[in-house]
Length: 512
Image (cartoon, rainbow, N blue to C red; front, side):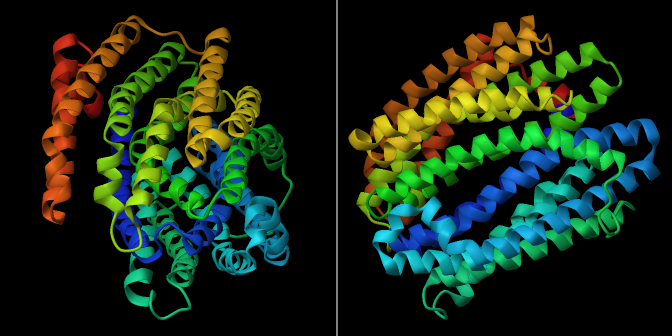
């Protein structure tokens, strides 16, 4: 059941990521990797940072287990009342935050991108674009709440499909209005704001179809809401620590040469494909599943869900990480190098992508391990793990900044993510929330062996396909497709031979 739900989320996420690549290719064409691109990417990251901090981070991680428990123990009527009270609190808090941010935007930019202050035109553009994009926070946070509600009702498709509308809006903004404004970034910023509204309307319509659309009301501090706020506090601190990693990255990138923020953005967009399709999909399906199993005192089932989530996450991310490190340059070259995005931008972005690849399994494991705590309403342990990771990230950023430049930022993020994942796994083990079963212990080493065999195949194949990368767009796309096909087939075949996976297990998991 868990893997079937995860496959639903992953399928829509994959479609969204494909559209996201089309969007980012267009962004690379119109913005490239320079000052205007840096300004837009900072303005786009700002509302997303607060969304992950307050909505997906603190609010949703506390809300989903409570809503699931209320639904299971007290029925739909009680759960609906709790959802409505939670919505009221979130809505008014968001409205206040958006108004304050609009007023304080220049000062926020001085904190988040201090290096931009040396270029007044770049700084002013960033402030203006951020004021356009920040209302996105209001709508996308409400989307997170409604999505959590639908996921708890085991309706995963609607929330997973919502990001598709963001990509369509940004593609439409570039194709229709890129030349109409002062810069293409202005069209993109308006597209972000409009996309938030459309995503909210989509989720609201799906909640109405499920006969579970919360009504708007004045906020009330009921016992359930107070309990929600109590659970949110450590979750907010933990999410804040995680998001501080991103803030540190942005601050340091703003101090580096023009284009550094853009290089991070483009590399991150490639990493988000496996991270979203695998990590977010499994983590999204795992939280309500574990919450129900824990509430029902189904200890063995909870152990099994955690083990299988880790197993399938590693089965997909270990070869993905290896491929990103080996063929980073062809990936970036084929996807982005055209018009304003030149060969130098390709080289820098490929270096960042390879560094991010080192941390990809850890990024996914964090999303798979954290629900083990949140399902048990333990929001403190992830805070401690994230705090240690933040401290290490800051230190490594400062150490790597001078010798490696923007690549050092990605490398620091990757290494600190591994520390975070290791601490989360250790905590679950010590508290007896997780024990690696025989199947997991047997298969992980075999996954590593299959990934190594795939790397050798890719190294040989890269030499064969290199001349194709110098040809026209058709040959370039064919070369990248060929490399991906070699990697997928090579890993799948080797994994089957050495026993890292069995097709019948995957089919059974998808049917379950």
